[in-house]
Amino acid sequence: MDKSKKPFRTFRKSKRSFRRRLPPIGSGDQIDYRNMSLISRFLSEQGKILSRRTNRLTLRQQRLITIAIKQARILSLLPFRNNEKQLERVESIPRTKNE
Image (tube, rainbow, N blue to C red; front, side, top):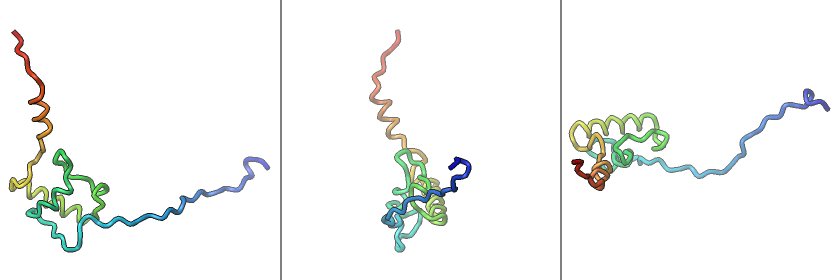
């Protein structure tokens, strides 16, 4: 049989059983700028807002989390940036005087 006359085959993805992950925000959790324990779960070590894909949130939940984080930053409940690592690095570097 020629290569041109071979039937076209479609490859299917293997059907793997997967465990559905629970959403990170429960039905009783209130998304608010004052709920620091909830908000801090969605920030990286540098203080950046994590993506929706990383957080496994719905579009509406991600928008509400983003608004709450921005409100908390404006009210000085959260820092705009987390500079702890930079400060530790600067303090650990010995400085010499150039004479």
